[in-house]
Length: 114
Length: 114
Image 1: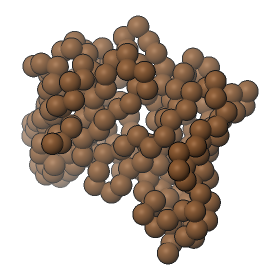
Image 2 (image 1 turned 120 degrees about the horizontal axis):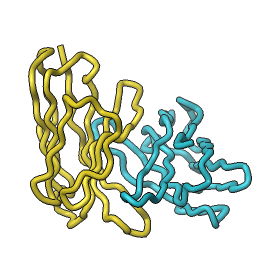
Image 3 (image 1 turned 180 degrees about the horizontal axis):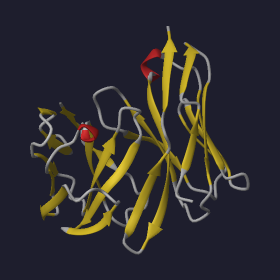
Image 4 (image 1 turned 180 degrees about the vertical axis):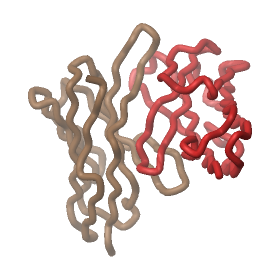
């Protein structure tokens, strides 16, 4: 129930195309869904996040779509650029008495070809 | 100024040795974490400390011993290293109760056990 499933494992997109990464979860106690971006040799960094009472959040070229009833959410990268090539992780947060905990998806390696 | 810094960035060692990784954050956060990222890029939480108190211990072998001398520091000591310990270890911090629950990661420490 703590799992977050992410797909695809890898994705190759042409410059200017749309990149779509999907995640699904089971635990309805998750209350916050961030996406992290990781470049080689660096730590993951928060990219964009959404709460379950919102169906969509857009920041620049990055959009999260959230479907609460299906327990799915996705990241869309519009006009993908070579600089977007990185590993993307979806995550879900659960609040516990001991503090909050983030569970990460398995990651998607995105390559944007010039 | 680096927000979350960890040293060393690389460790190469023989099986059976003991090694330590140090982490410091200057963000004033009260919660710190150790994550392990394996060769498939999967990020898994190992430990979490809040104000020097251990709050998450994710069935990690007791060869791994975290120590938090103060809320800005969280070190990881590993005894009797095994081949399977080879991974990138990330330190992270967050502000407990912070509305977004954002994690700030260090750049990672790549451990190679020969």
